Length: 180
Ligand SMILES: Cc1cc2nc3c(=O)[nH]c(=O)nc-3n(C[C@H](O)[C@H](O)[C@H](O)COP(=O)(O)O)c2cc1C
Image (cartoon, rainbow, N blue to C red; front, side, top):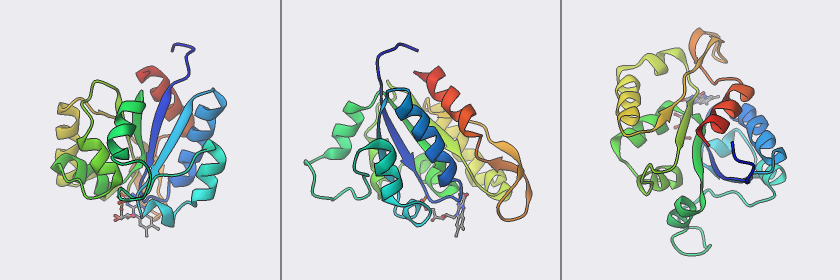
């Protein structure tokens, strides 16, 4: 990876694994990168804005219609060198693959031209991960050039054991570095 600091757009959705994403964000900031975070409304039920603001020293984006500069979702796609959704819920994966743009993260996604790396780090229950809707969406996204990372296998918060766990923070950090 070039030593130049990169602009990373780090997007979180409503998964129990949001706490793990904080380690990745912290690592990126410590390595000198500029990180802006976007949270879905449901991600905010798992993690507070203060944590992300403390880690990134920047305000968190949550509302497409918030009164910042106009068309901030377009500005973010110009600013970023890389985008990642981490953790990515089954909902956002299926929504992105369907081309729906009804929240901040999906609106940004539709404004991306895929000339820059776009990563998705899924985190969900094993049945959600194996669901035909999710399988089809992952294939669709990969076909568009999105880098959908794998998942880890193991204990899940619901008590099930299997695929769908978010990769460990170090593995996600390495994937980001590789993509850059
Ligand atoms: C305690 C709890 C944990 C959840 N964890 C996950 C998860 O890890 N992955 C997932 O896909 N959905 C999970 N969900 C369900 C999502 O939060 C739900 O589908 C939500 O609509 C996702 O919204 P978003 O994708 O806009 O953030 C969880 C829900 C609860 C109540």
